[in-house]
Image 1 (spheres, helix red, strand yellow):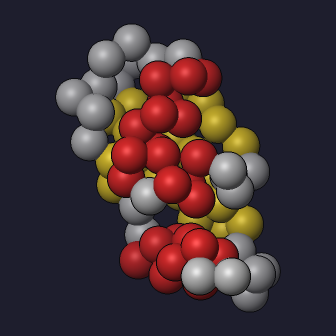
Image 2 (tube, one colour):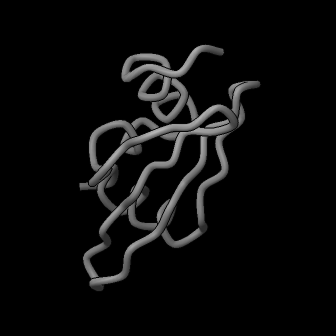
Length: 71
């Protein structure tokens, strides 16, 4: 996968629809895209999108995205 705004955002959406809407910053290097999330509790977490399209997201971020989706 070539990293650009659209491909990274699509990968995030495919992992969880809310991931593509609530990130704070987005950047990438040759190996992975790095996405930051600022959670309601004040913590900051990073998620990673790899060239093969896999997405690695901390459980705390998924939990908050699930809560947002249930509103």
